[in-house]
Image 1: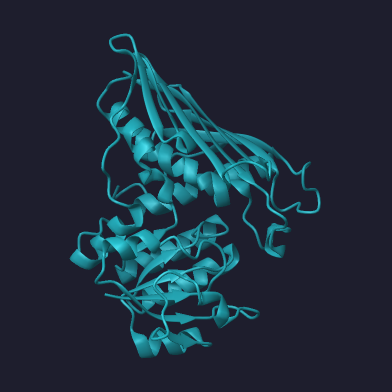
Image 2 (image 1 turned 90 degrees about the vertical axis):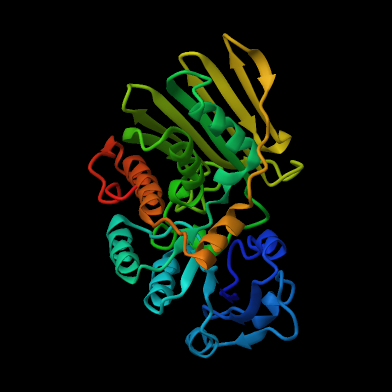
Length: 337
């Protein structure tokens, strides 16, 4: 299977485990996507060897190599255009997130993906972390009864500096579509598409020279049964922290609670029947591996869920920006879930 890299901004090496799991997948080519990029930046990318073809023009790469799958690593405002380019050529796509900067662009890309019938995914790999999956399995098994609320967080280091496209909302979609989409993805995966409206707040107090990217944000998602899910996001994690991120999830129900902390690689259940106990961690396949396998064997299930996650994230950011509650009902991406 021929795999190519288009651009090297963002999360370039996410595919490394996939290459180990699927040895028949080879990085056949890399290409620059934007002015200012350098082919030297691909030198240490997983699977790139002296035999990997290198292109300064991405369309030339797509024409000459005809890859089966392309990973797109570009800033957010560039994602829809590059994804459309590949999908129309019948090339499966794994892309940076979010899929689009706004709802209109998301709708257009959905039409393109639906017409092309080509597999498309974004870098939403948190949902398949084994300890989060253990908590999700417990919810699906009814071990906490009816879920009525949840608390989730992602806290990241800011780093020495952020790229300039983080500064302005014209080039950055906001903290919720960029970071919070991971939480929304794992919540819908665990609870189902049960959210009816969203509101939230944010501040840029910690990094006022980057007004396009909040330093901290909170999102409230109302559930069909009246429950509420809270999402906390920030770029406030100290540089001295042992890891870049701190990701946590807790789901409370009528009969118990599950909680999972990624850095501790743990998942716990507290219920009336069992008391407190550690959940069995499943031997789940790597998320990127699972996507590529579905492309290879033709079992890819469709793009509706991916677009729904992005829609919720964009509407959550809209609710923050406009200072109001936004309905999540009547989604155009629900029909084929």
